[in-house]
Amino acid sequence: MGNMSIIYEALLDLHAEVVIKESIRKFREVNLYKEIDDALQNGDEDLFIKLTNELKTINESSA
Image 1: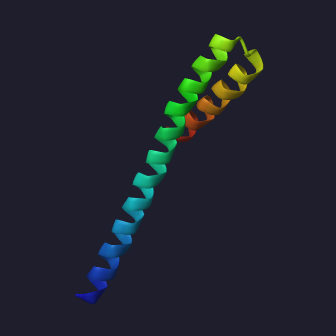
Image 2: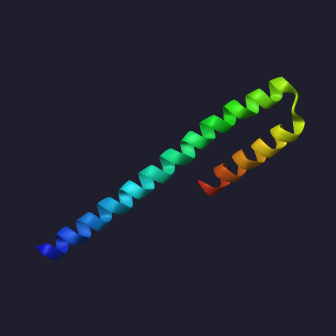
């Protein structure tokens, strides 16, 4: 019975890690959209390109 408990705890830890990483990724994605909008409004083409490239990288890594 102790072995099952260890395996169950390991699976819970792994699941928690996945949830946390996805939450951080989603948080950054939402903030990037806001920053991209600001860059567009301010006419900052360099920042816009930098942020959209970061967004593209984040989206590719989650696929």
